Length: 85
Image (cartoon, rainbow, N blue to C red):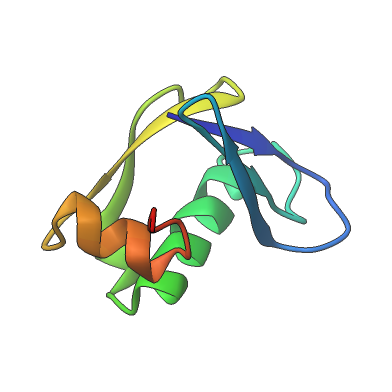
């Protein structure tokens, strides 16, 4: 699960607490702009096309579930800097 903070100072994957990934985006939560910024940030960090990342639950909520096509969970965690070591 992702907890999204719109209208932040910068786009960043902040940290993970209790299984919730905290992400900040500069975009406003208007007309899907914050969701688009979230997907773009994840795609960029994972090195995949923006079209392979989508919000599947929570489009109008701060708490979201995102689908990333073509990457295993451990590969995605490593790409986002969340690999447990």
